[in-house]
Image (cartoon, rainbow, N blue to C red):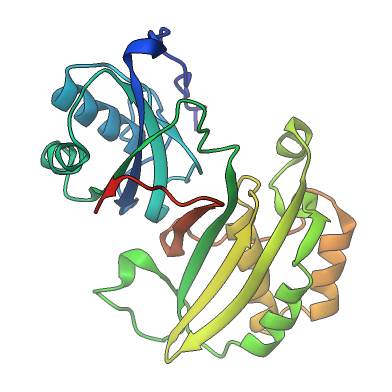
Length: 273
């Protein structure tokens, strides 16, 4: 497969004295998109948002996201920002953008924020859920939003292994190759990593300051090996301690992963929901 061209995040500078910064809370089903970030010739969530903003305001604006999501990954409350000269009300931004957006993307809220507000740097944590349908039969309703896996899963053992992830660690073993590991530090701080079960639905929740590429999917793929009895808890911990790219596998399918929210110290004040 040929490498995909990623479009730069920057656009020509705009006069900040005549613009304001708007933050949007976005929900989307990622099934038909090649991730959030712009990619030449491919459908992405960012492309749809920027197209809708241009139709509503007449302005070409670049959208910045707080947490990039991969192809096929969903979001309950993604956070994005953009600058605009438009004086539309927050209600108009919500209703107008939803008018132009496809049915699998929706603006849930809009906020005006200070020019200095940086949605990436000021985020204190990101929360992801991964949904596993632990059933021998598929679910036509939930199929796009979970990974179906039959057979017994020892969620107790999985939770014991997941507990080793909490705290600050070098998660190099949970990236796919050495090139990804070399791009920047692979040290991350994880605040929560645990599983819960509600009938056939098993949910893995992981909360961290930030994540490495494919970190959550590589983590759940490895935890599933523990749950299936193919790996011990000690072996899982050894993978974490080894700090060698590619040891955590397989990467779980994208369909089960959802960005639930991005957390900030101070909640947005002026908003419309």
